[in-house]
Image (cartoon, rainbow, N blue to C red):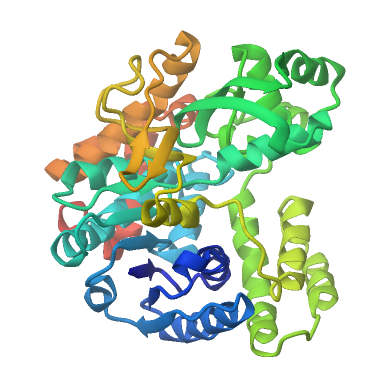
Length: 465
């Protein structure tokens, strides 16, 4: 059995995924093919992969190549973690150009003008990979995508796929359950829940402990004002809509028109909204990467204190927890612990037949009735030898579906723009984006899109250059 990791130069994520995979005895002798276009990062990831295998006493066959087709050929599972354009110049342009027009963002990878531009850069590259997979992968192969914008990519790839389906994977459901369990003081594995919607905007339709509805307690936290400062947006949305959303407050604040407005610093302060948060995270990683590389090459050099001092001196505009996460990541590089990611569990269940339930992004084929058929939805899925089998939800609460459709319309226009090579649909997507439309007028939107397309032209298909 061959498992291919595309974008394996994401060394820390590759390390975590391989730790999960190789910890299963049934997968411990798999062929692991690593691919990246950055040869230096690929070499480091190869070294790390071998160290992980040794740590969990696995004996996989590990290969590494900068040739994508060679990596994909014969693969039963392909895991994708690429980023087209990178932090420099891609993400910086996605933030700096809109800011000149008065449009500010927090993350910019899922929706909004940042998500639109990231999709335009990424989907054509991944569609070329899709063609390779359809041609070269093993029978009944599966593509597991971790790349954002998740919904647009899942929609576009599955719409064009001839043989190999894509399941989009995210950790927002798992992380949110953990966060809410912490807020409530309840062990998270004792919570029973149902969750459905679209990626980064799914909602917990049921959240219970020992047969008791936990929503009254969550609403008490809201009314008492005792929620974590960094999670005020989602608690506010629960108060307004009746259900709690997945993904973080900094993400959610830019999917809707109510929180980030010109001249409304009072809203930013009230809801603790960190503008340019993703830029800060990227800067943290830029500072951390040399330490990570040294720690991986020279285990137990314990450089987290030095990194922490450097990050504090740099005064990076980012939430404090991201700096803490970076130093904890450095300390934990030598431990192989199972992550919350679903990728390895899917592979194990499909290989062994052991049934599991995961939350995956798939096409809406009569799964959620009051969302458009054919769009990408995030629902519970049963996984066994038969593959990833989505479960039917029926109708979502009408207010939730209505909110999701405002995001789905943007996703649809981006997917359609690329499928039909219609440049006008890019403008339409930006015009209909809730946050963009709340801040800019039509002339500003067109001018901003033109400037972004020109800046990104080297990463875009010909009809957008």
